[in-house]
Amino acid sequence: MTENDIFRTIVKPAQGKLFKDKNSKFYGYIFPVINEEQIKSHLEAIKKEHYSARHWCYAYQIGTESRNYRANDDGEPNNSAGMPIYGQIQSFEVTNVLIIVVRYFGGVKLGVGGLINAYRTGAQLALEAAEIVEKTINKTYQLNFEYKNMSKVMRILKENHVEIINQTLELSCLLEISVRKSNSNQIFDLFKMFFGVDIIEL
Image (cartoon, rainbow, N blue to C red; front, side, top):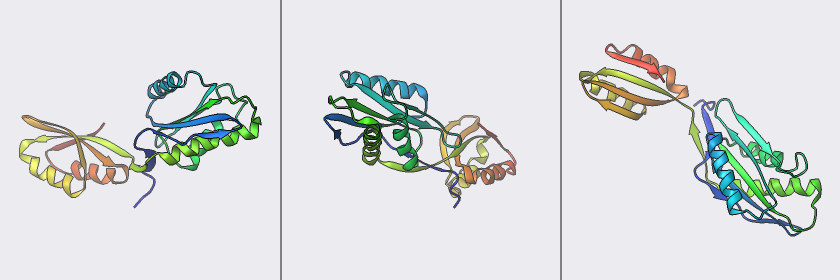
């Protein structure tokens, strides 16, 4: 089995255990995300929920084959919050995630070392509370064929464990299928050689 078409992500949002240091409180949250609109919306929701907090520091990573990340210190000293959070995303080898660590200031400064430890721990606790799963990177194809070829097409899909995402069955049949990247060339070639079936990559 090739591993280059597998990525790790989380199933659903989770909240880590509260972390305290010198009366400052740190709440870590993790969310599954695939775009910046979702990230913005989660940040707004957490800021509303914790409106009296001092800082809402975060890091995210999105993408599977090419990855895009950002780390934000939200007013804490440079690289004392966002990068330690992002370091945990790397350490747990997950993508398509956003981690927000909310800080309520306890009146005592922690120093840069203390902040790095607190934000890293807040992120780690959020990740430990989340359900991490492995998923495959898939390609999507569209199959177009006449109804008389339906049973043959379905047999190939079943034998190769190919998932059907959408289907339109009228005079001709349109199927949208999702194929694991490592098997995609093989499936594409199978249907390319199948007379009466058109396959295109979406």
